[in-house]
Length: 221
Picture (cartoon, rainbow, N blue to C red):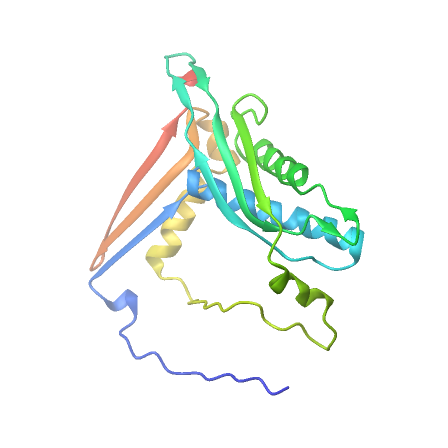
């Protein structure tokens, strides 16, 4: 099958040559980043289970989530978690294939707990988190493409994607700054710094201003 690819030249002035540039990076412990990373892990673990049981990745869309804020009482020297956070995982996942049941909910919760253990130093996935899995089976009209014969699967949806490269100097600096602030070396030297980091870079001509928002861990303050 011939590939229908058309390349068009982008004639806009390169961003690095423009007067203004604004770049934002949400770090490892930002709620948006937590949701994205956990859902990625859920999809990976589901795919592994599907491959193990059926030799193919079954239909799933594990990309909808909400992290509901908890409640804490902060104090110098260490506070207390009064109300745990709630992670809601939603969208679609195949739960049964020809009588074989896949423990989708258990896989999702296990994936979330493991990610939290690996990435958030002071969040206990058992005590500080609650989990609500709302993954439902997909429509038969969409999921049956995996049973159809042929050399390749037909599409069951429309999607558009945008990508760009290379990153500008400002983008690279903001990204490296966040990774440094969330590095093991930095956390070891400054344990009071939390993983919830957000950096905004504002460049005007050749002058760059960085605004850093970072949570603090009260037990070290």
